[in-house]
Length: 417
Length: 142
Ligand SMILES: Cc1cc2nc3c(=O)[nH]c(=O)nc-3n(C[C@H](O)[C@H](O)[C@H](O)COP(=O)(O)OP(=O)(O)OC[C@H]3O[C@@H](n4cnc5c(N)ncnc54)[C@H](O)[C@@H]3O)c2cc1C
Image (cartoon, rainbow over all chains, first blue to last red; front, side):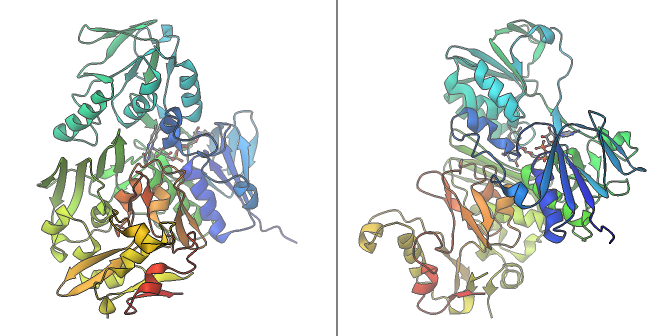
């Protein structure tokens, strides 16, 4: 009898990879699904690494799926690094030289920290990135009660790291070339609120300034200042891992080019998650939108299509819920168009409206922001603002702002006639 | 899978569902002790749709739930057609609040988040909001 079983290979062991495997299994229960992953760990919730250092979670709770999930679903793991895809031969090569034949392959390789060349960095003994569980564990080991930590990068990753470790250190200083914290998602006013909250909790900042060179325990800043440290964390930026597809002759930009079915330009090669770039449904053009939901949805979409389905994922937008010491900032979309503002007790809500649609928003404050997801759905689902009461909605988002027709058509389990 | 179905036409706007929800999830046997003089944290909310229309919104237990796909801690999970929350795992990041298209997830008294779990975990058996709805505006249907 002919063996009709296929082999699906997934490169990378993160959320997109697991999503892909789950997507395959929604239709194909019997073919081989092989995940090649190089961290030597079962998939985990990457954003929890700072909460781990803070003592708010543990390694068990960080697992992305329960023990037994992978064997129950027939998902195999190979611990190793994929080094090449041979599109003609339909094989993936591993670092030891082993080749695996595939019917379809998905690249879910995520991104890698980007460290610009900085003089003297090689002389720094205790330096860490902040991307992986291994990074968190080794950083945790290097901390001691009086230690002085310098974090280069005041973006999401650098600040989450700062929050996670500050209670375990003597001092934490964060520097960034940008003039404000979280410069990619917050504007000046919102950023200064967030910075003030971080400072209240003992984190120091050197903004519009960065390390020009290093001694073993000293950073020589561009401004001429010096910062002494025991531990250095580099959180400058990340770059999508595109090389597997690029080297195989596939199209890449800042991320791997994929269509809304998560197909790359190469036959039978798919890609999903942080390593890809896709159309931003909020109008921001084609870009890398490296967040968990996009990795999870993109991965599932790729998997469903690898198994012969016709799934589409075309509503990726940038969105972030980020909080520090109780102050929450909720942002989504693109900050383009006409600005509308609503202020309340210690809260700031900014909305950007373009061509009759909400393109982005930024909310910050000690608020619960109940219903904020309604704003997000206005962007993701392209709901024209003239079909609802936007003035009321800005203050108090609620399903009641949607038209009766929208409610009955789009909300699951809903009747109004 | 059964779900709580909202019928706008029959909602009286009486808010009983909110009280029944808060009571069912309080863990207490006495309704007065559970609710009197305390801040209410119901997982269902009655909204005013204007023109005399009211309706109650709770988690829709979406078939492809964006809250679960976005949850950074694994607290939200999708099991047997229901979206559940494990408060022990919630880190209070508010991502689910940012993405829920119905505003059906909110903060609880302890800084974690709460949502309708169809009364599957609190021993009530069937959703308390449905059982207590005096006019059939909430039903529990396949
Ligand atoms: C500190 C921190 C906080 C974050 N907070 C949030 C948040 O609050 N909300 C949010 O939505 N997102 C957050 N993110 C981003 C989120 O973690 C990512 O979007 C998500 O993990 C992307 O999943 P992925 O599967 O695409 O990639 P990854 O999780 O990066 O997984 C890719 C995996 O592939 C492996 N790999 C790479 N190349 C190869 C190869 N050649 N062979 C084998 N294996 C390979 C990598 O080692 C890695 O394990 C955060 C990230 C960090 C670091």
